[in-house]
Length: 111
Image (cartoon, rainbow, N blue to C red; front, side, top):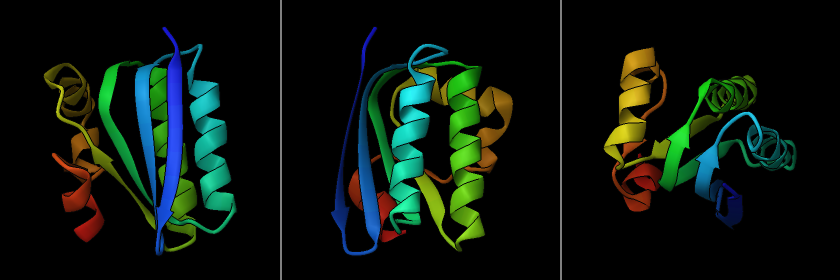
């Protein structure tokens, strides 16, 4: 499965829209894109994952690494996720307590 990533900036928040599956094959692209956002000065990132159908441990690792980078710069990563199958992964791993998870981009931006 392919992974499509697009991003836009609204004031001090970057919104990354992710569509596809995040797995061992596509995680490096996500890591590169997320690192680029943070390195170019966008420390508050909203990741719109409503169109992500699957995420594995390599994808979770990318998110945790990105969160660490953002926090080093007093930023944060907020997730927008509505698919039960993906939300279940966050609950099982306990990452739902690490990442703020929202139902819409607007809620995540206003947090």
